[in-house]
Length: 394
Length: 161
Image 1 (cartoon, each protein chain N blue to C red):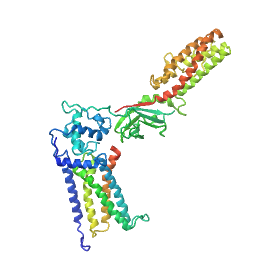
Image 2: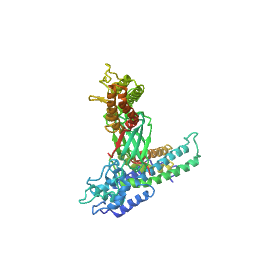
Image 3: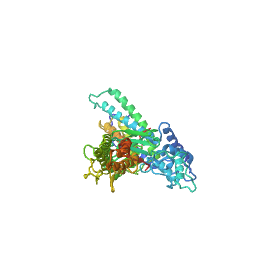
Image 4: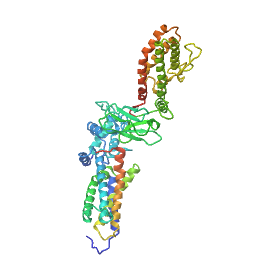
C-alpha cells in the first residue's frame, strides 16, 4: 500500500491502461486459439458426418436442413467453397452471420460438411435428408367481414418459435405474433389496424428477424383492388357497396320475385305470372331489359347490372368469380347454371298463354329456388375465404 | 485438414464447456455479458449509495453497499473472463463493419480501463473525483460493448438460451 502522504504518480494509471490495452490488442490480432488461424493447413479434411450433425444443430436454423437455404441464410448447396474458407467463415462469421457459433474441431467438421454439400468436391454427393426439409409453407387467410384478422396455417409444425410480420413497403413491418415450436397455426380475429390490405400487402414468416423470411407471399396491387371491390367496397359504411353485398341485394330481389311468381300461380293470376317472370329474366340478365311478357313495357326491379349480365357485359356473379379468382368460389359453379335454368324457365312463363300451361315452368322455378338460396348463402363466406396468401419459401 | 491439436483442444473444450449450459458458445457469451451488464448496474447503484447520492432511496447501509459493490464487481469481472477469452483469443480484433469495429475497439480498451480503475480503488492518493469517473467510464464501456454484441445478437439473430 503506498504511503498516504506521498503524491500519486499520474503516469502510472495511464501506463497501466496502455499496457493492458496493448496486451489485449496484441492477443486480438494474434488470435492464439483461433482453430482456423495460422495453424490451419489443408491436408485431408474434418469429419463431414459429425459436421452434418453439428450443422443440423447449429446452422440449419438459418441455412435450412441440408444447407438448402430458406431459413434466412443463403443456400450452401451448389455454391462451391473450399474447406479453409468454409471453416474460417464458421469461426469468424460473415455479413450478418455471427462469429463463433462453433469453435474448434466442431467448426472444422462443419466446414468439411459444407464443402461436401457445396459441390466443390468432385464426385461428392450431398447427403440426402431422410425427411423432406421442414418448411413453413402454408397459407395465411385474412378473416372477418372486413378482413381485420388473420389465420395462419403451416403445412408442417414450426421448427422453432417463428414470428409473423405484415409488411406494407411504405411503412415498417408490423410484428403480428408468433407460432410456437411444434405448432402449425396462429389466429387473431382483429389485429386492431382495420382492414389489413389497406396498409399491408405482404406476410412474412421468419425466425426473429423479418429480413430473413422462411416463407412469404405478397398480394399484387390488382389483387388487393379486386379483394377490396369484392369484400370491402368503397365509402362508408365499409362493405355496404362491395360486390358481395350489392349482389346479395339483387339476389334477394330475385328470390322475392320467385316467391311472387309462385303466389301468382297459386292465385291463378296469369298477368302476374307473366309479369314476375319478366322480372326474373331482367334481374338475372340486367340491361338491356326485355319485354318478356310483351305488354309493351319492359320492366326491371333490379339495378340493371344483372346477376349474370348479357351480351359480353359481366353481371354480378361473373364479377365475383373474377374478383375472387376464377373458379375459387366453388358454389358459383352450380349457382350460375341454376340461375340460367331459371331464366330459361322464366322466359317460357313470361310468354305463357294460360295459368294451366304455366304450371311446369313455375314448378321448375319453385323447385329450384331453395337450392339457389342455399348456394348463394355460401358465396359471401367463400368470397372472404378467397382473401388468402399462399406462403412459399423465398 | 490438420489443426494444431492444442489450439483445437482448447477452443473445442471451451465450446464444449459453454454448450453444457447454452446451445452454443456465442449464446453463452451473450448471456454472460448480459449478466455482467446487470451487475454493472448494481455497481452503479451501490457506488451511488456509498457516495451518498441516492437521496432517500437508501435500501442498504453504506457498509452493506460497499460489500455489494465489491462482490458485484468481482462477479462481473468473473463473467467477463470467458467472454474475453472467446472474443480476444478466438475471434480476434476485427473491423468487418461498424458494429464489429466499435465492439473490437471498446472491448480492447475495457480491460485497460478496468486495470486503471482497480489502481484507483487501491491507491487513495488520487483526487476524490477520479474513482467515480473511472468507474462510470468502465460501466459506459461495458454498456457499449454489450449493446454492440449481446443486444445486437438477441434482437437481430436469436433470442434464447
